Every structure is written in C-alpha cells, then in structure tokens.
Image (cartoon, rainbow, N blue to C red):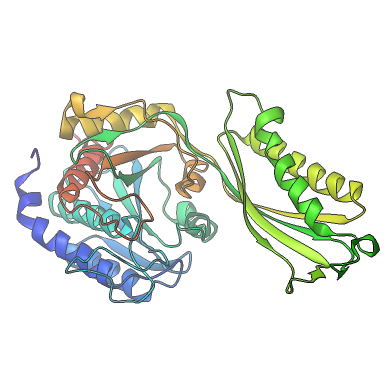
Length: 390
C-alpha cells in the first residue's frame, strides 16, 4: 500500500478512533460526545486552532504551513453524524446506543480527516493554510448550510474546498470522481387533499379524497414521463399516505409526503411547478381541495471542473492512474456538501469501501482498510494544491 511510514505507524490509533465513534453514534446536530472527541483528538494532534460549536456542533481546525508566501487556503470536509437504524453487523465495535448506528461511514470519514490533521500538523510541508471542517447533520439536517450561515467561510476563508465519501462495491484503494452534477437535489413535499367525509355506505353524500389520491399518484409520474426532457433526470416519489381511522368511514382528508430529486436546477423548478398544478387541478376536478407544501432541502451537488481534475490527480498520486476513474455516474442520492460547493470552488471524490453492504443498511460498516488510502489522498491533495515554497 503506497502510504507514508507515519500513516502506517498511526493506523492503529485511527482505527480505534473510528471504532470509538462507531460505538457511540449520535444523530444530526445532537453530537456532544462526537464533536468533543474530534476536538480533543485535533488538539492532541497539535493543530494551530480548534473552534467548536460552529453550526451548532461543527468543529473547525486550522493548520498553518511552514510558509505562507502564496496566502492561499484550502478546506477539507468530513461529516460526523449517524443514522436512526438498528445495527446488524455483529462487530466488536457495534453501536452501544439502541436504534442508532454509523450506517453511512461518517465515522470513517472523520477518522481519515483526523489522520490528515495528524500528518499535516507534524510535517507542515506546505505553503498556506489548511482548514479542516468536521460537519454535523449531513443526514437530512443541512449541517453544511448551518455552518456556512454561522460564518464558516467568512471566519475561515478558503480558495477551494474538497469532500470525500466512501463507496461500497468499489475496491479499497480505488477512487472515482466526475465534473459537473454528481448527486441530486433533495426536495420534500407534503400534499393534503381535503374532501367531505361520511359513511362508507353513502359515498354520494361525500367528497371522497381517495380517488383524488389515486389519480394524483398516477399523474405525478407524468412529470418524469411527459414533462421533462428524456435526457434529464428527475425522480418523484410519494412515500407516505395517511388518512382515515375506520373501515366504514370515508375520511375527511388525506395527507401524503414524498421527495423530488433532480440533477439540474431548471428541472427542479419545473418539477415543483408541475406538482403544484397537478395537486390543485386534480383535486378541483373531483370537487376537493388540494394543498401542496414544498420544501427545497439540498441543492444539486456540482463538482467544479478544475478542482475535479486536481482531486483526480491527487488520487492518482496515491493509487496510480489505473485505479482512479473520472467518469463516476451521477446518483440521485443527495449530499449537503452541495452547499459548500455553491460557495467555494471544489469537488467531492468517492473512495472504495470494498465488498460491503450498501449505505444506510443495518449490516453496513466502514472498511478500516480504506483509512490509510483516505489519509494519503488528503495529504497528497494538500501538497499538490499548497506546494511548499522553494
């Protein structure tokens, strides 16, 4: 494995750090133990500054190189939160918190960035400043946005920002990336259909919301099938339906929720507008009332072209050209690193997690063998983007 000696010497403590976070998962912004452990480890690593409580429970560390001739700075970001899932890995480091687990590898992401902090603080063989961003609430809480709104890039300005996520099914030691849209936007909606309830034996005296719901579910799929260019991507999913309490009563109202995911902002606008018209129009056609509440959550994750190439070259320096692809297919899953990429040029790369269960699965576990590769990538990226002054 092409890693420097110091990484091999410290890999055991990084694995144990990862296992410790895994045993004690915390959700969204409620990360008192996780954030404290990260801050403690960063101080022990000898970084120049550690700032806590940014975006509620985010942690930011600053490491200055031996010189600062260029005046440049880059940001490296990791997430920290877990998921509300009952773990089924059976590992010695299984979650000790019922109903919570690190099912997306954020424990591994934090361990890799901590490893980079240790190496960079020790060598300082770069010119400029590195800002390490440990972020809460990636899993639906928009922690990146919260940190930005709390002054992240105002207090710690950077010229570029980079993220990394593990990828199950891709070999350990491999990387994949692509410029442009790589992950979908995530919008959430709630639709309420209001009719007139009554006895199930006398539907003529009611305005039954059930047929409205049936027609609306069908019509919502025409957004993708008939309103959006076939070469564009959009997914409209109605995921919950709530209404009625008895087998012999036609309910007064029914509530549905779901998500819309796209890879272009223009398609996002179109999908929202069409869903609103479909909701109102179909409900009116049945004599009912339809109300749409639409919330834009995560924007499309768009890798910047130049920074994508910088990231790929750093990965090649670690893994070799044959183990780095630049044509990663986009996914409709979302990522709130998108907020950071909307503020600062940058890119997110995927690192192989081997033959593991999929993300958000009860049997998923981050592959400890990937830690050395991730640390090597981070340090190679810093050396390439902030080369030591001659």
